[in-house]
Length: 467
Image (cartoon, rainbow, N blue to C red; front, side, top):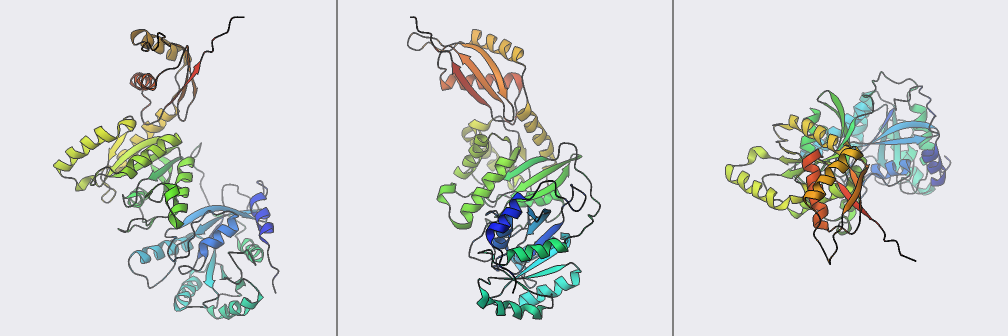
């Protein structure tokens, strides 16, 4: 019987593996391991077990994972890319068929395939059909008999020999049993020589998060930009659950786009897969440099749209607002939308706006200019001398109102940081919020800062007490 792998051992090796270990001889290349199987056999649970953290969204219903999602993983000093895929059913129809197509693409991109089967159920007709396709692929396939929580379940795992994929590996993805032996076998099957690869542009691709409420067209836009069906698209809201990374070349430069789950409500009001998907979306936004917030132009601006915009601003990310489904608008709705924007989006009037159709691809090429503009503003720095010369003129022409017989003044200012721009005002007293907003507005009029939030803080001079 194989030795049981305790989770402590796997976590130590997976997380603490030395950074310089690279048996392939090419630090820029990582072999790909795809995790496939029919719906609800525990693929995402196994992915989380290998990663040593709860990264993939897991819920006890089939079909939670719908796209292929890549994670960086390590075992025994060997780094590889772990590809989680949606449930694979060769006979599927509708959205399930598109999920299956994503799993097939994952297998095509993989160097090694982990085929996960529920040992408590045994080999189903779907499992046998998938096994047949995997045998044809010519890829190394490791058969994972999941949900073997103890020795009593090993006979069920042995019955999976009839899939003709070699020896089944009995594991419990939930408890970690057998995961060490499984990963040893996976690492042994990885290729020793990497295929030809090309490095990214200097500095790496800029990171863009696609965010918005469910069913506004984020996945459709990503597919249109990528020029292929990279993620599953369906009319049912909430199709995307995990953030999906895609490297896309636009305007002659690489961009890393992240498609995220639609945000329905506040994180603390969500539950189940929706709760964890919201956390993944927030984490993807934190990793991004610029966010494209998609708004359904065919519907009135909703509270969710405003909350998502606030979420981007509060995270300090550059911002582009894309109004999708523009091709469906009549003249009356366009006029109505303009009034909604003027009334409700006062906080983000500085954000570049792009009208697009993710379905037809109309004007999606204009996103590049908007993204460049937002990132330029996000990184902009004003020399201290020029900043203070401007503020001196501004304060002289528009001094702070007198309050309680006192009139605070701005003595000096500096730009403390970029990405986003942060300014510190050294003052003789507290500046009212309305005056700080006035200063921000005039800074934008003078220096631009298009597409980026701005932070203005004060440092009030303390009065020296006379002894």
